[in-house]
Length: 214
Ligand SMILES: [Zn+2]
Image (cartoon, rainbow, N blue to C red; front, side):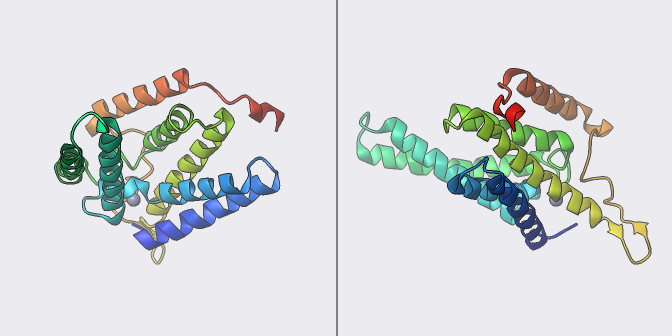
């Protein structure tokens, strides 16, 4: 499989090209382009969060811990004494970083569900949902951001598959076919659930309207 550095470089190069096209055609502003570039690049390392103790996993859990602590800080502000607020924020951050992380590492299998096409779609749909409901993005921009996340994610999966081919003697390594998975019978329940969530996401989320005029 490709290493962290390769994934990061390829995702950044791919996102930069796509961002340049978006800027040239005038569909995004420069700050928006920077955001899309960051999203696409980060998505390029996202699938490896199923690899316990990898750089992306630690990075993602550090960010989530920080977000949870900040959320607790704001939610409790003015309701209890400052010492309690700080204590609860710290404890919730530690809980996510160590307990939730350990649980997540225990149930995920490297190159399992996260290395699949429906997982790429799920992260894309999550981007749309968070973008319009939490960050207040314009609908069209939220879908464009989702396309960057999906694109970066798929680049990762394709790179993993490419690295499964031994170019010197044209043989396939054992890992071939384990990155760009569509369905896996041994974990069919998880896949069915994943497809159900993706289907519901496509059904429930509003579709972009502005793209018709592009
Ligand atoms: Zn991978």
